Figure 1: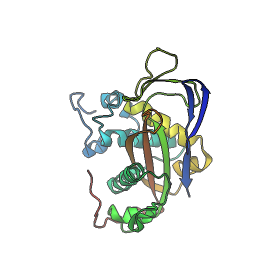
Figure 2: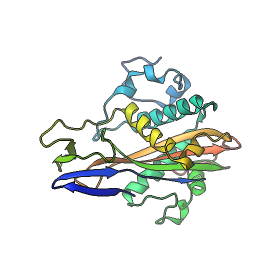
Figure 3: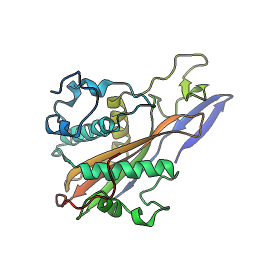
Figure 4: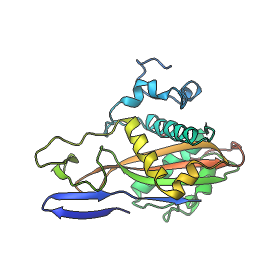
Length: 245
């Protein structure tokens, strides 16, 4: 999943990987609300100051992060002559819970090997309240800081998960909500299978979810993320046993 190469003493590079399955509000507002999807779209979300906030790994606004990924994905679809997708809370719920369990149970796969009730994306969608799941799913890992993959870097404070490109240099800053979304969508778009899911002409609805963790290598800040696309027919709502945290 992660290619790690030692370049010289205390100087490292890390590459990222993905896998795939054939998957104006007032600036005084401080958190994202799901009702904001009614007035924010891929056309105007970049004017929302919330998305320019820097990620605080101890106090993350997960709905805001998911919204940023959602809107950048729709923006990407429109640039490629595809219609934007409709937001679906049930798909976000399924995506979030899969990302969370991938972190907590330490796996990276479309299939959960630890829970037979949520082994497949279809099962997870049903737990999230979808009676007719017909899903495509993308998953990925990505850095929480603005590190350029495969670039040499130096750990600064392993306890805090801080890094620099030069010994004693400026710390590599955390992503903003927007820059993280741009980076992970680009990562997916650079992979043919992920790109196919994002640009799927049969996709109708989308929900995105991510979960933060400190990686094993010097506490590198990272996320595991999931995109769930509903294909062919719009969601028929059912009873959700998974709840929004």
